[in-house]
Image 1 (cartoon, helix red, strand yellow):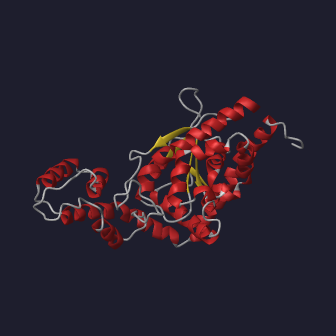
Image 2 (cartoon, one colour):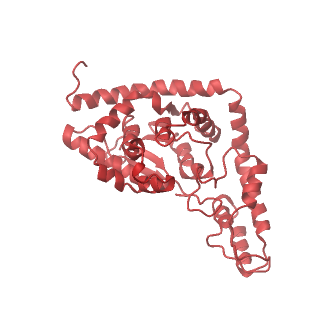
Image 3 (spheres, one colour):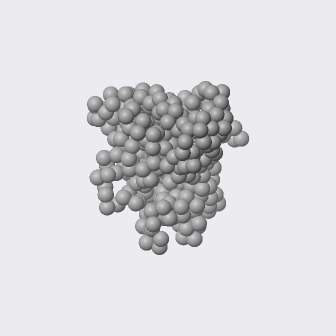
Length: 340
C-alpha cells in the first residue's frame, strides 16, 4: 500500500454489487469514507461489480444489468464525484479476469472454504456443497479487482475484512514467486462497522429485506421505521423498556445529532413513560431529512441515464489504461510476455 510507512501515495478502490438499490448500511459502512478519501487520495476508483454479482445471479443477468445504473445513481447522488473518482464497470476490464486466473494458482480450495465472509454468505444463501465455483473463488476475483489498479486502501464494511486479508496473502505469494510486484492493502472500516437491520438482524441487507434505501420516499421511510424492532416486552407506555438491542435507539445513536436529548430519552424509556411511537416519529423525521436531498439529487440524475452511462464509459476507459499497465508488468514477472 502507498501509506505513511513507505511514503507511497494512497490509491483507493471500492465498489458495489449491482443487485439492488443501496441503503443506509452502505452509506455508513463505505460511502462516507468514499466521500472523504476522494479529496485526499492520489487516485480513487469506484467499481460497479457486475461480474461479482453474477456469481450468484448467473441465471438472472437482467437483474444485474438493470442495477448497474441504480448503484451508480446512488453513489453520484451521495456526492461521489466522477471528476475525483474513476467510475468503471468490472466486466469491461478483461485484465481483471486474467489476473484472477493467475491468482487462482496461488490459493488452495481449503483456504477459500475457510474464508469467513464466503462461509457466512454460503450459509445465508443455502449453497452447501453445491456452491457455484465462481462464488467460492470471488475473494480471488476481489484481489484482482483491487490489485489491477494498484489500489492500497479499501473502504469496506466489517464483514469484508477477511477479503482484504486474503488479498494480502495473494500479494505475498505472488511477490515471493515472481518478484516484488504488488504492495500490501489496508482496509478502512466505516465509523459504523455494521448497521443493524430494521428487524434487529445483525446486518442490514438487500437480500433480507430489512433495509432503508437511500432512494426511499418519506412515506416508505416512515412505514419502515414504524415497523422497526424495539423491545417486545414494552407493551404499554408506562412499562420500563430496554434500550440495548432496541433498533430505534441504535439508529438514534448514529443519526441523531442531539446526543443529550437521546441520552434523556433513553433514561425515560428505561424508567417507563415513553412510548415506541414517540421515538419512532423522531427517528423517521431525522432519516427523512437525511435521505431527502440524496433522493432528490438522484431523481434529477435519473432523468438523463445516458449521461450516467457516459460517466461509466469514460471512467472504464481510464481504468482500462491502469489495467493494461499492471497486466504488462505481471506478464513480465511471470515470464509470459512473449510478444510484448
